[in-house]
Length: 165
View 1 (cartoon, rainbow, N blue to C red):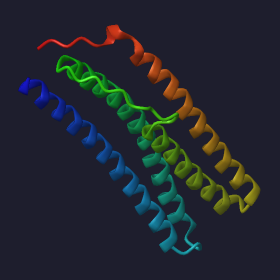
View 2 (view 1 turned 90 degrees about the vertical axis):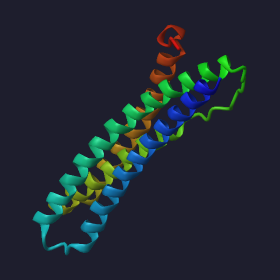
View 3 (view 1 turned 30 degrees about the vertical axis):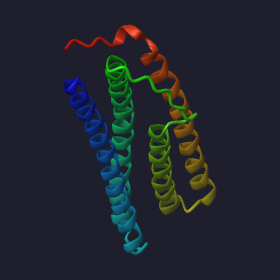
């Protein structure tokens, strides 16, 4: 029994560690935005380099968010199996879009802002900038909803999980 409780604690610690990694990526992106606002607009080259760096970091953040979403589902399934083994049967209400999906949408929003910024700097066309921003948000929302459905279906399969202890 104690081994299972320790195992559950390790799984939760791993979930929290992965979430901390995501907050660190978001903090780096915040640094990108800080740099963009501190540099004068006359220096387009610097704005371009920083915005491209931010787009790259957002892309990595999107990949990490999806990977951690899958990791989270794996860990929760393991924790549920351990709790059942311990005789703990708890049901919790699941929100329509989990936190992981919201984090994914945030990355797409930030990606859209940076992309819009680049178009505004070079084309000075507010309409195109807003269009790219809205497209990025739309892609983020659709991706989160799609990922939520796919990941949920993937982890409903009972054969994916076997615990040997």
